[in-house]
Image (cartoon, rainbow, N blue to C red; front, side):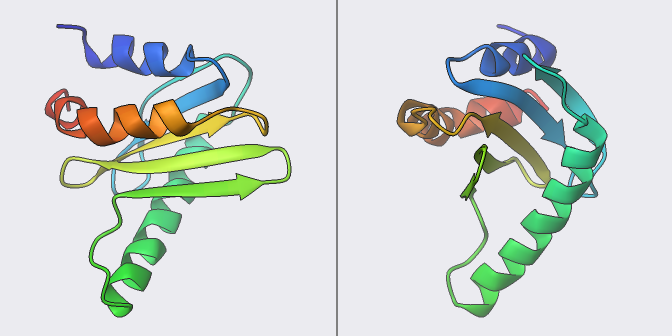
Length: 117
């Protein structure tokens, strides 16, 4: 079975993915890999803050805990996915990336990814 660092490197090597950042609930960088330069510590801190607020939105709207969020920006997409009890995975993808297969894999392999933590 591959280790955590190897899985993160594999995710960042997928077509269209520019970086994979694994972070703790409090925004600390756990692991990252990137095909191009990225400020992983900044992404981790901001992604944790976003996850906390999105979680509150889900609770307040009666939708429960956040599982996955897809944020589309001018120059790309950020996918934020909960792994385990408090860890998160942030994937940065290009604006033209086809993230359908990536979202499918995250949904079906979330438990296995969380088990690596």
